[in-house]
Image 1 (cartoon, rainbow over the protein chains, first blue to last red):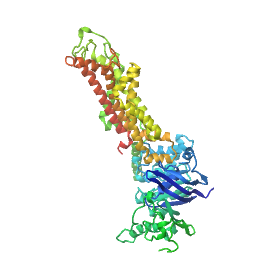
Image 2 (tube, rainbow over the protein chains, first blue to last red):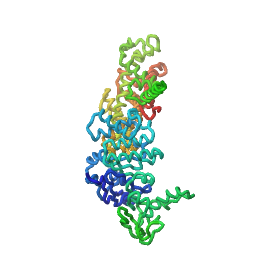
Image 3 (tube, rainbow over the protein chains, first blue to last red):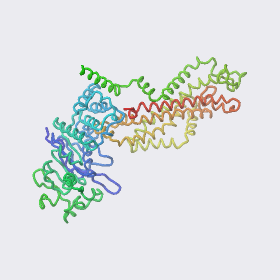
Image 4 (cartoon, one colour):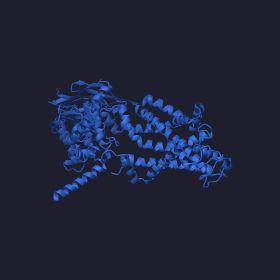
Length: 325
Length: 304
């Protein structure tokens, strides 16, 4: 048994456009240890979803993986032919999406959609598939599974639909589940239930990679967190470490945007500016344009990911010199 | 006591839920639901059945023969003997209407169905595959559409010769391109929807996505196209017959009957009026039925 379910090394994705090549994922390395929940945070457009898609092999055209490797349980999967990769999807890697409203086929009964996932990857009769689907429905706590089996997506609530999605993704017991903003479209109580469900899956032996811009979600369930900015990982640490000693100015900015609410101040703090256009990245550190502590060095050179304490890596020139706030 | 009562209520509620979203719906249930929600559609359904029966049983329903000439009674007005009068050869109009229904109904339905299948399959493939496949299929469709459809039909009928099978073939090849274009545009929209991506994520193959996830979602559009294509086919056939390229006299088709009746429009208007009414009735019936089916077949339209 390999102790790393997913191991991504120096992954780079390139999208050719009329005005040059964009790299939404740039030299990203990350790993998801077996039986863990790992998180990726960052603003919209910083490359989180692209990373996930590159791992599943479903990059939107004309995006392409131009460098790096993806290993699933020690097995190299980047070079595999499409047919092989399709076999992996659903059985080894699965994914759930942000919008449970639109992620299910509106004209097929939800039970049949889950059946499809089973029958694609295992030889079994309709009745067997139905039995497995119903068992899975009960496992993800869909009440009255038998009745819901015959429902169309529009007859279910958002929370139930997300449960169906999870059932569909999990029914073949994949080793890795990628959850792309799994709770963004749901209200807070349902969010808590879904997160609890993901925790249970981890116990059942599936590693989870959660992608989110919601720090609350990350804090609740993740063991280890990667912070992404403009296609690169800028900080990585175990969750407690990251939340108690954030080192990168961007991470601190993210936390301040949340904390200022909690402490009851009148103004909501934000990080000034937006994620830079990936076609016109600054010469040095990608964050230099928005960073309050930016120095001369930052504008010229890209800092490396350096370890500040065991397991805690930061991509910033200022860490160590200036210490924590 | 109280507990048993409560249990009964729960069971009743369960049953109701079961029946609402229950097992596979049988055809009878479907018709009943349609009857509740859309009466015109059910009436139209029976009108179509009735017409089909009348066409099939034509020889039993009338004492006259299809081509039985009676030159003493040319162009006679509707009477007890000839309910819809007689034509320029003294043939009973009602009889010819019944026999003509055989040809016209077939010509309405068969090419509409064939062009629907051909167009849907090619449209989905073009839309989903994209690239060179898309370019080839759609350029062929464009060439087909570039010709006025009447001209194209005429050319094909000249090349192939008359006869009902060639009429089917011609009308199919004239109509498929429209269907393909509509289905292709729907496919392009659906291709990027999240449920298709979700299907790809669980490892569904390309062919299966087209068959199971995209085509069923095009069904409402296809149904509407079908009901629109039927009258179009009937009318095109009547024009072809008029030009001497479709069904040949003395055989009857509704379009042919309208066109021969035109010469006598002032002194014997029933000659054109009767088949015209028949075409209108058929077209309306198919349209209403299409709308009704749309309401009951699309699960999104069902009442929750």
